[in-house]
Image 1 (spheres, one colour):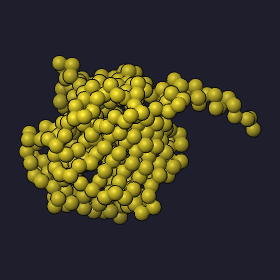
Image 2: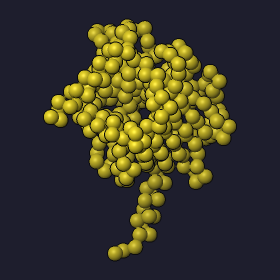
Image 3: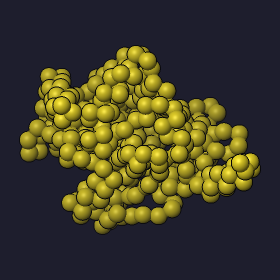
Image 4: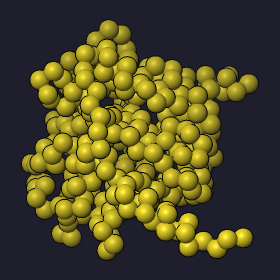
Amino acid sequence: MRRLIESVAQGVILFLCFVFGRRIDRSSVPWLDGPTGPPRIGTSFHRSVAAEAGLEVRTGRDLGLLPDCAALDGGGFDSRSLHPSVRDFYEHTSRYHLDVWSQWSPLFWPFGWALIHFVSRRMEQLNFPMYPLETAHGMTSDVEQLVEPSGRVVFTSWLRRNLGSGLVIYSGFYSTASPPGHGPCVKTVFPVVRGNATVLLRPEAQPDGSLRLISSGRRFGDPGFYRITEAGPGRLRVWYVRGFHEIFHVYPDSDGSVRTDHFLRWWGLSVLNLHYHITLAGQASQAAGSAAASSPIR
């Protein structure tokens, strides 16, 4: 029965992509180019992508989702306006430890539960936490770069797992891209079965040095959410899901850490809110040790 429900759910998603998507040549939309997934994504898919494309996998404790935030400059955005701690997080992400809390809208919680239990768990991808304490043990944050022989970083892989359950929360590929309707955007690609979910987020620097990343637009070619499926050799079917928006607000805290509020909305209705507390890995370990040392012995 479970497998039947999984097949029906995936079939519905593919049907919606067929009905609302447009069939286009992959080469005509380089700003949407990204890996498409097998039935299971898991923890090592990014390495198989690198091997197939002849890319080097670069690891280290100083890698960032963006090699340089200046890659986003243009269209009214100036990376020099960012607070140093916000910029450092994006340029040196692997230095940091993340804790996350979740809050689902009661209206969308049943749909989210069904999607995660019948699609995400089997796919080993996009296992959003359903309860605030589900990530009480924290999450991993593994950053690796996929690099051409010339040294150009094609994608940065960011794998995050739930430390308590071991489930893959996100396995994403990060880069920048300039869609026809906007200047440089943060591009995130989340491989799924026979396709991917690609999100283009336009950057906004705030007066206080914080950063807002917004995936919203009016039409195909704007920043926003694109659900992509394979449609034959060199062909894609692309659905621009205009009603689905994501907003990230990344801001410095008074204690030197960075915080992020992540909002997912459907036609203006709140679906899921995620809050991240981001600390330097060494500071997170010291805080955990101090907390353990101060706990009373029972």
